Image (cartoon, rainbow, N blue to C red; front, side):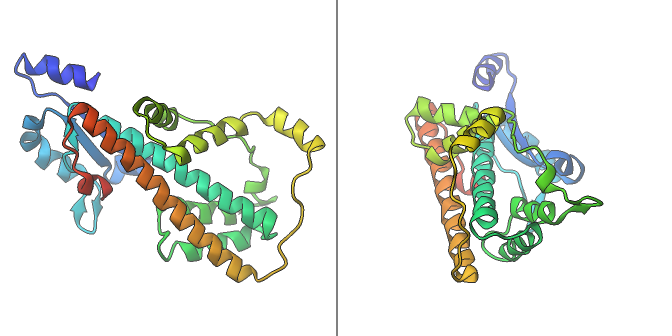
Length: 250
């Protein structure tokens, strides 16, 4: 739609911009990350406004021109797909800690808190730490939350785009399928009564194991980002977008 509107409106002398927006509630209050695309002639006119309202990272605005026509929305879609991958990787790390190492929620919260001080520092790791340690009068809340995940569609769109462009964005694709699997709760409950999974708790050096797990999570995140940028690069070739990869990465 953005590509069509950009082309149609330029004929009428209008400079159309389609911008991805990220940040949720905090973004609305304190400044979002903006990913504008469309007619590049519009950027000098809107740049001061967009960069003024955008969030700041190390003093720099979280907003730069992404590329022509539909590039802004496409980048936002892939951004969300990468986030799907990040969340699934965190879930799998949690699963290993809980079922493989036998850690309780407080212990897992402490681990994620330590991880957030280093290379894995991120909003998702931070809120995972906070969610794990949250308690009410009945104890840790997480253990009582229904283990099914919904989705808004952007992760699925990223996986579909990867198939359309022939790019193996495998990590994001599997993250979408994991959400689909989680929604099949009744089937999972029936299967668990028939098929017993591993039940042993690791008895070796847990501190060393956790360090291996941290490194595995880190390299998996790198793979997820690399696959996302592979998809961006291919789409840019097809649509003749001159993407600002450095700005996108920031």
